[in-house]
Amino acid sequence: MANADLLSALGFFTRRSFLDPDTCRRLREAVQAAPTSLARVLDDERGDILDRSSRSTERASVATEAVELIEGRLKAVLPEVERQYSLPLTGLQSLQFLVYRQGDFFSAHSDGDDSDDAADFVRARRVAAIVFLNGESGTENSNGYQGGALTFYGLFEQPEAKTLGLPLEAEEGLLVTFPSDVVHEVLPVTAGERYTAVTWFVS
Image (cartoon, rainbow, N blue to C red; front, side, top):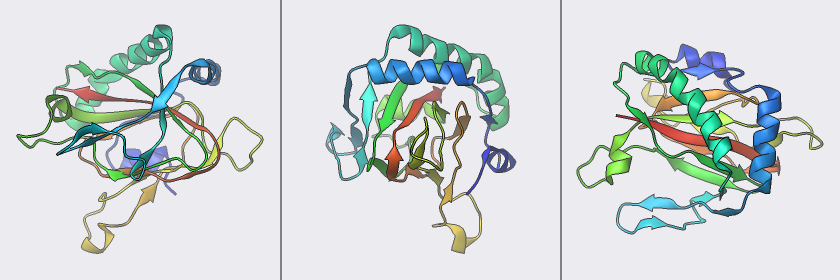
């Protein structure tokens, strides 16, 4: 299992303790108090649809203050993200607060698409950003979760490694970014609840 240091060595921009434990706790409480809806997926032919066979998670509609807090932190590191990926970036798409409960997952996919028939907001995505509001834990009686690893594919050039998945060991408060065309998935959560805030840097 990879940690933030390995992802940084592979060229990703990461930041440990991007959010401190107290801020993460308050944001988790905001998510827990917010109404949720089932997250949808974008299908090339059918548009924005509900497909529980490829994505099972909930999206929380949190208070504006929580959104602005994380957006402010992300905008502050935008110049560093630009330099890391050698990309001109202009801002962020709307922040999403996601809850993965036991059994929830998101099958392998990429977030960007440069094809002419892709939606404009998808074509604008350059770098995905995920902030972990809690981390993986070895025990069920904690603020963490088990399973639910963010897993990357295609990070190594060797042909035999193309289908090799590299799971990330998540940490509370960790920021991970990666190019929007990188294939990734969220493995099923086996215990607890996984809380993240997700967005995309755009150009």
